[in-house]
Image (cartoon, rainbow, N blue to C red):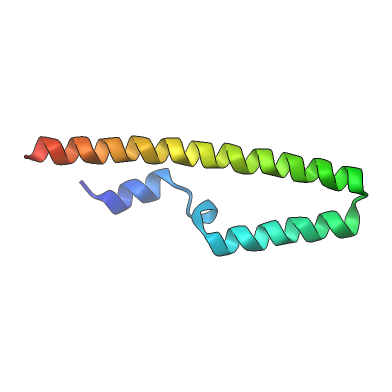
Length: 78
């Protein structure tokens, strides 16, 4: 079982990069502050927060599935 290939196949490396996440979030916040009124900025931040939570939930679920397959594979080899 090639674990690295499994990880690359199931987890999005763009999302998992903390540095990129921080840069994109800062860019979104700057855009909100510069281009939108307070109500629009708050709404866009709420939508972005919902998106972040949805992506995290998907990645967590995929990570758990992958972990279960890894454990099953390791147990079946013994």
